[in-house]
Picture (cartoon, rainbow, N blue to C red):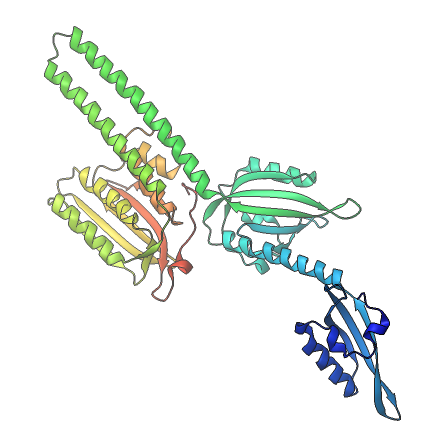
Length: 440
């Protein structure tokens, strides 16, 4: 405390308490006067230099002939202990509230079970921390998880070495995401690794952007080179071939140019969609389909367009979903060469999802373009319609949904979108889902 004993003798004990602690000190003193002991009462006191210290006080009443005449008290300085405790609480709170997933695994148990997971882990994966305690990290793996990344992670853990890997993991609802996993060994005072600290960061957005840039660069470079070769060949033909009229060659050049323009427009639309913020909202299915169907009935009066909405729920997604559905309907009506062209748009309830399908009786989708979506094979992507399907997939998966398109048995094709559903009493924040991988 810094006081000489003579300075304190005769002074009320509250003189040395901080204002915040005085009431607690008086309450403890009253308990002693009633004949009770006090144990581990924490009191803040002001030192001679004006600093604050924390004492843990124990006290018992002193009696004579049944009367309380004094107090026996012992105070232990726990200032440093309380400071360390506050620092620990601050660190624990920071870890609990961190926006990245943080886990701690027991390195001395088989399979390195998780012994702690923070709220950030729940936000990223959907798993409550209580549900993952005692489990191995492997429960996050699934069909698209790269075995090479898993091997690297396992070997680093076995060697007790820090590592960083990026791999596809799966949330509790089965939706895949790109997870950047950092693992570091934690040693005790003896230098023995007792735990592993794991940090999970959802990097799906970055991986999606990187994938998009690669595709656009490859497709545009490939098509520009091919189109220039075609135009060069047609120009040579114009110079040397007397049997082909300039009008025919001009028509061919115009077709090549129009295809290039279409591809460029599709690429620009895809780039614009990727640059927008993810803004989920409540979309009314009836209004969505009515607006789209009315527009294409007017543009293509010979095509019969039927709609069927079988849900009371709304769709939880952004406004760009209107453009994605429009793209599917336009493909269905524009390329339908049937004598009686028909397009059916159906929207049904599937639990926490809304499933929207667009079916037609046309010639069916090209296998190459179908593989772009079903297998993520965009190496041979050459046409604007293929990039259009990429645009649909981009818009749907950024809201946690999925997209599939395939030929129907017989004639025609079927495109299916799955998006989060939202109940009437749900908020958008509760119903919305995080972006997922591009192809699943």
